[in-house]
Length: 90
Picture (cartoon, rainbow, N blue to C red):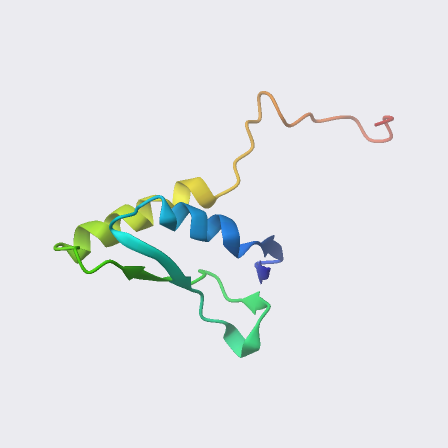
């Protein structure tokens, strides 16, 4: 587990998302740690190993960067976030 901007980040979901790009990637990743971790400076850097069969690295990089959306927490404010008055019982 790493800490990015005070948020716990588990590396296995990152690896799973990168692995979804197989055969373009080998699913191996490296996350360089600042000062030995677990705190990592934002934006978190990820090194992704590509397979030997990849001909166009720039398109693979673009595809990997587009996966950011799968890794970012998003609250569906209409359904999952309820704003309650101060002091109201939970």
